[in-house]
Image (cartoon, rainbow over all chains, first blue to last red; front, side, top):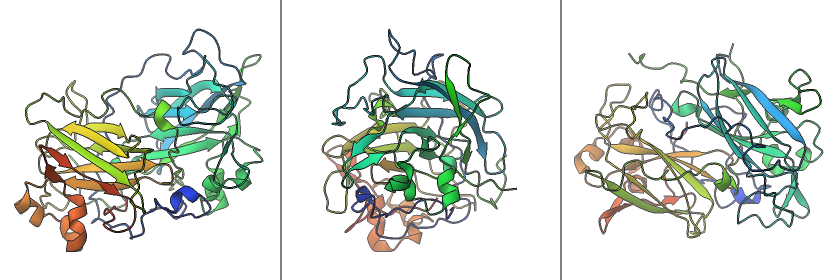
Length: 225
Length: 179
């Protein structure tokens, strides 16, 4: 387990207080969690990676490309793995009946996408930049703009659900969810960088974000044949 | 050279637009031979329902092997969110007994992964079957756990369904495993 992971109990993020396990996690013997990642039963359609083309019209907001690679901890590309994303619209509102933020919904934006990494572990989404939004964690609490990511990788231990942030967002130092990660280097790993090379002239800014998933445990008992 | 891992963040409350999918809770179809319905609730440290949790099940096949290639049949994976009462359900079939890497036979079980608002990292637990008394008694994982807490991992038969609650915190807290 990485010491760079957030703890379960982080009282500044109020939601953890009654949901963090109080008892220590039980360690299994070496290798007991070394089995393959789930086979995901959902198919991916050609336009699932483009969140701006799921409706009759185009969504309002700043069109962006979010792209990068998925690697394992040995630096090898993770191929053919599903990447699921979801996010708020440009006004900071999710298409969710429990989202009570009084900002407009966009009839041309659902805010969910999927893609499969290619042979080099690359993924690419076209979307609009999500807005910041208020939440009731503390007085005047606002989430920095972010996109939620969910990945499986190749091993059961690779599973990752996380959030990608945008460079320079002044809300990041005040966000207890991001700040729950104990070290600065770990927090920076969740911040994408502006990518002028991938930016398409006259069309969309691009942000690059690399994702590193846990592989098999260091010393498995035996190789699976 | 080992690359630093990308840290985890909470799934948040608004994953409904992205993660749940139609029939995600059906690992087996409800009419299939041996189909079992699993019902439960996710509860917080006050015993209150957690209405914004997502559970995933990943289980081996009837021979205790994890599928590596989709063959058009059920894959052994399911995903279901909780409702306003913190309730979830799955339909599946009992898996075979999986052999552990050290050669020991494990009692049939489902791997259950829990995501929720307020969980900065996901939690991993197991659901064992109440009609496997002998296999459960010698299961190498159940035997790592103090006897009083083992029962949190064994489903209960309840009116034709298996009942399995996930208690995130507090009295009768579910046993979760380091991953």
